[in-house]
Length: 356
Ligand SMILES: Nc1ncnc2c1ncn2[C@@H]1O[C@H](COP(=O)(O)OP(=O)(O)OP(=O)(O)O)[C@@H](O)[C@H]1O
Ligand SMILES: [Mg+2]
Image (cartoon, rainbow, N blue to C red):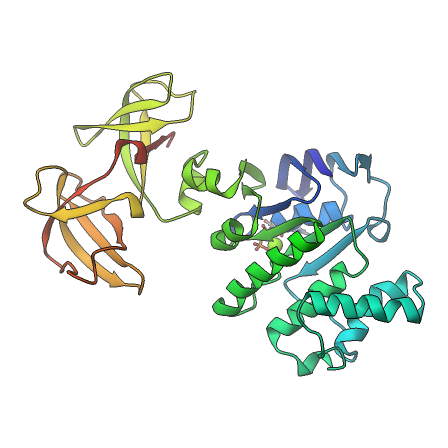
């Protein structure tokens, strides 16, 4: 449905988007996830037609849009800063794109009703924008972006200004509406949770480049590189040396002269080089100090986060490389205390080896 091939954009001497290739299937929900300044909005603005790529091609429905101005592309948009008309009612805001397209009053009001209904604002159509809450305003913006049934919906951090609870509700709401209408959607965010919750596909971007394009579970379980492993989830990184590897992706590394088994996806690196071993905080098992297996460690800090306890650990054989571990299960019965001697371990398949 949407395809970008070798799309690049330079601002002055800064390459904001660095030869991006991406394809989005009809009806799919893609989220572009990346830190501030990584080029996410620039990608969206090129798809919308507000700026032109320096090189590469963008096609929508199999046709190049290079010569189409923004209004000629069938695209609905919702941005972080809402561009609602404050002097109009919710219903007038939603009706606006239809009026622009020459709809007559009769057809128009039924359609507006239907879309206010879809975003669960039935009965609030006559309110002015200032008389609505932040989340309600957001839903007016969604209805307005979708009311003319565009081929494509572009979302640029539309939930960023909302408080956490409302944002999480709206993420599910967005997903519901998107699935109900089946509209192809490209969403932009720097919030990893939002990307994982809402999307069929996640594209992780940094510095204008795509690091990984995969379904959310894949990006989480099998991050393509160190950047993705650090950006999605809470991950510990420890310096290591690669000792050996097998063709099926198993690796042996040394960390402070001790040998560990892990897994490696990168095919380019060879034995003997410096690597980084990555271990997600929820994969670190903390057991009592008299346990047989694992490395000796001391609890340096505990943080209560409601559903889990976070331990910061000093691992005795790894001076200067503290380890974070999440404890979801046992902390209510028996929380560990600062200074307690413990042992830490993990499964070999959870130790991910990357180029540094
Ligand atoms: N019109 C412009 N002129 C010059 N530089 C620009 C322009 N627009 C964007 N940039 C630069 O291009 C890079 C990418 O910007 P972009 O807005 O795409 O980032 P982003 O990933 O959307 O970030 P954020 O999460 O902060 O919105 C940044 O370094 C930004 O400063
Ligand atoms: Mg942006």
